[in-house]
Length: 342
Ligand code: DAH
Image (tube, rainbow, N blue to C red; front, side, top):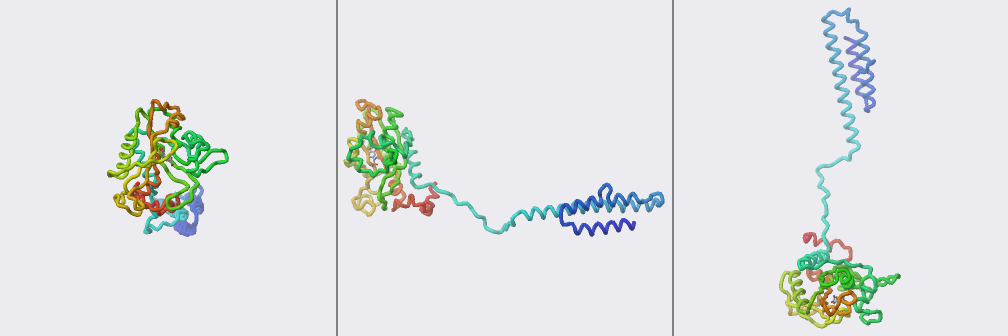
């Protein structure tokens, strides 16, 4: 019996000094292993000399000690393992406020583009993209603007060393689309254009246009006007008063500037419309026969209208953005205002 007490005390003491899982495993082996101290104790007892009563007491004490050792070793292991995990984990203060997520937002030009695409798709137009790096042929020649045409001077062009251009207008998609679809056809081509402009509040070297082209039998100016009016009323969610002025573009004949009555002052004159009551928005016209020919479409059978809407300018008007530089400036505060519009 005394030996049992000695063993218990020794075990308790050694257990206290166990600092690692390995220490505890060694302790287990020492006391509970097959040749451990507990097994030895049992072996050394001569049961024959013990009275049955003492034998019973010894058995009970012995078993109690074994159970105690086993359970305290398990408990010690659990504590040590938990401590190890806790050391690896960063401490977490559950009372701190969360870091939160900032939601991105769509660029105002993207919002207007998506809206226009929706409107035109509902009228059966297909959407083309074309290329931002374009052949001189599609950007100029095929648009009835040959090498020596003075209208080339109207667009300050970025030329690449390999003779390609950064497209100056989405009109470059017109002949590509005619080649692809033939006639009849209806397409729009929204996209980015580039010009070597001096930047000010309303001019940028990078801007967005949306080209439109419809070719069919007997297309007239009346078709052009009705589609433009429908488009504008849907974009601005109200009837807009329009007027047509003659305008020159080599790829249309006749060519027009379609103005809308100023939506801010209603036509009486204000700063936005430079006191004229009108805002220049949509250059357009009937497709020049040469352009149809370049696209492989017979101008004696087919006719069409085209327009080139300034997407960037439309976004400025729709959202009241006073300075074009805000669009590409990378100042996130300008874009954050559109979070709710997504
Ligand atoms: N591409 C012209 C420009 O950027 C705009 C334009 C005018 C497009 C008349 C057209 C059009 O399709 O018919 O100045």
